[in-house]
Image (cartoon, rainbow, N blue to C red; front, side, top):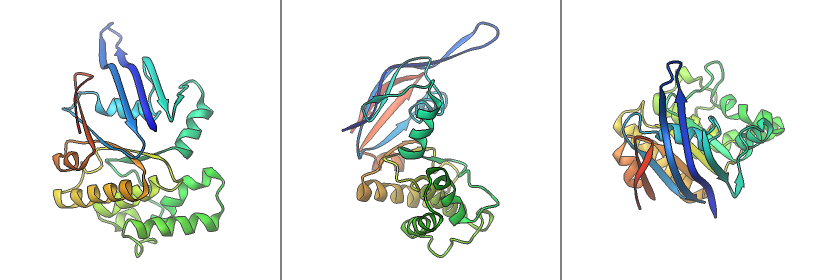
Length: 227
């Protein structure tokens, strides 16, 4: 099953001087259920812009996006909220954990909006912390965790509502190479054992080597795909 499809996707920005910058140009892409796909390319290649549009954090200037066969209506805010709650999880380079919440509370937070009981939230958070190897850190604040541990909590949070797709923007970018490899291995394990699709942007060749497919972008266009 195709989980993501883009058709002739374009994104451009127009500045006050009339200058138009094309961030994406004619992007056609399919991502299948259960795939682990890496977007690679130099800064300004369009990889993060493409990820944000797929994740409905930004909207295209033209073209179409389909998630699980349904065309995304970027004008329908309730539909976008539903996608964020049920279908898509996010992992960010800067972790984006809430500093005043401990690990369990950070993972429970997205479940508040899905009408999940408090007891089930705590049960699910505990399960996920065990999954990412932090079962003994549930009461720790982000400031009491290392960078790698914070990213593990962020991955657990992304899984909280059992999404079928996780989008990760440079998830190892703030980590040393050894910790980055451990995070890569963890995401790959979740992908293989739970069937969750992953799409990651990365400069990390180690992560790219573990992917099912590497999509390379340059100047807003896909220039190659390697399986």
